[in-house]
Amino acid sequence: MRFFLKFSLLLALIIFTSSIILPRRYGFAIPRPPGPALDKQIRFNYLEDVETLRPEIVLMGDSTLGASTNVDELARQTGQSMYQIGIPGSASALWYLILKNDLAPATYHPKYLIVVFRNSLLTAPGYRVHGSYFDLLDEYADREEPLLLQNSYLNFMNPLEVLAEEYLPLYVARSNVRQAIDRHVRYFSPALFGCNQNCTDLALAELFQGADFEPQALTDAIGAAESYLYTPERLDFADQVGKSYLPEMIRMAQENNIQLIFVRVKVKTNADDPRVAAYVNDLADYLSQNHAILLDYGADARLTSDLFLDAIHLNAKGREVFTPILAQDLKILLAGE
Image 1 (cartoon, one colour):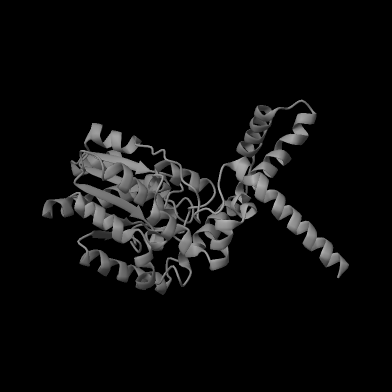
Image 2: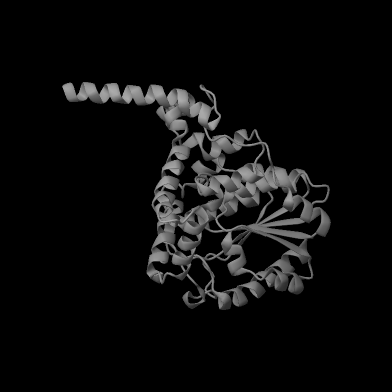
């Protein structure tokens, strides 16, 4: 009982002290709106490029876009000018923000926007939105993004988390505190031996760039991250679509006379899962009803296992195989428009 009392007093002291120090240290007020804080800066690099280059087709996706498609060759074979927005680590939340804040407000709009995705990624708004991924989102987000906060953050919080986000400074500043601790651990000991922050960063970069990591470890890491997309909840299209950015992306594209084309690339992860097939069928029906186009290569037998670099990326030979396949289907599609 005495131990519990000491623990309770210490906890109360920490909460009280942090409630005074942390808001001042990191510049927030209590109570505050739940969810991450966005700054008011927006990058308009894609808007500027599209207005300057005036491409007929814009392609958008993550690293699987560059791995699967040679955009210059695709443009040559289709006879269409193209511009690529391929951002490694991006997902539907970032694609929504770029469409909303960079492409839709432009004075020039491409005729087609091709979004390259895999399986349930289009209806997984909580995928790749935390940590360094949030920093990337913040670059293309306005100060006020209610749909982003609701779909990617608040929908995944329980009532206690929401209250903590509003009223508990120690919880609000948890990432800042963790980063401060990480910095101390990383730089304190080397400084004792005369190695400053820049010296430490260079040493760590050289160590990890030269490390001979086991290939299977990378494959396992990708598989662990991808597993989020294949939970029963994520593969329930009817339940997820209303909480996703897909309806709003379709609305914005139609409002700006941009034809959306969604290209599902093949991956080796859960390739034979019947739940994925059911999900894709529902997705295809939804896109058809909303005048968007789906080109589905998720089960394409021409993309054999030897054409993959890892679980989700094609290798160089795979890109050579897939690019003309996509080009041929786009030529047929565009000829019919």
